[in-house]
Length: 336
Image 1 (tube, rainbow, N blue to C red):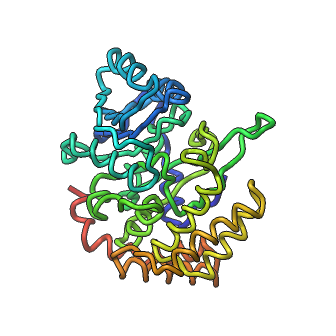
Image 2: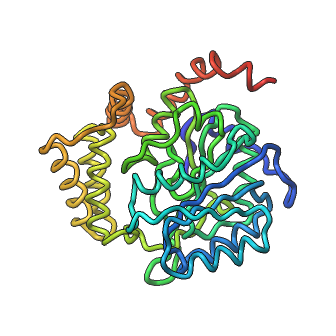
């Protein structure tokens, strides 16, 4: 199990799960953007139906699918009254980053968020363990500052063995974002650009919330789609990631070291180089960056501190410093 980012996060991690089959307190809505997911989605649908703590409402937004997705969704929704399928006008192509957030927001607009305590963004290419949401709901109940969290993604290698995608403990992962609704509203939702799923966690921490993920057997899920294959190919995906890091204002040295670290994973060397290409090409053309300059500075300070003391300690320091900030704004509400 990966170590939690801070003592507060560790307290949340130690919170006991509710008994199997017992729904944790708090209404929960899940929103799933999807497009042409027929190859994977039936596994996701089955794993959601098998959850020991199913959401009160699951809104699935079909973003113009042209495969069997609409028929599969219609059959599933017909036998599950907590599922609502929404058809979004077709944009003509899959769009990573801005398109995902646009489709999520389309579904969010169909929901009265004030009626729910928790909101999740969930992809339809995942196989979730049965107690996944039960455990996350209970940990939210055990730590009021916990704003967003997740388990860890694993993929199946060529030998059939599951392998970690190596996601940091200081972030909730993009394919299954579990949020306290108050936190989601506090940060203003997701930024409609590549790296939306990293920017949001930094935005949480800046406001005193905790963002984290745990690598535990009951929270490990399989990512069914091959990494980097959601649009075009893995090299385009790595280059897009580099652009996203530039967009959110990542420190150049921190980013280069991250890209070098990624070179040890497939596609070896070339994947990291593609990341650097995306970052420095965006820098050279002076591409637009995250409009929130204060958040960009916050991210760079955190990254530079992480270079000096390590990511876990830098995260723990921010979580500790954010406690007073969060208490000043939310402690009274959490006790009501």
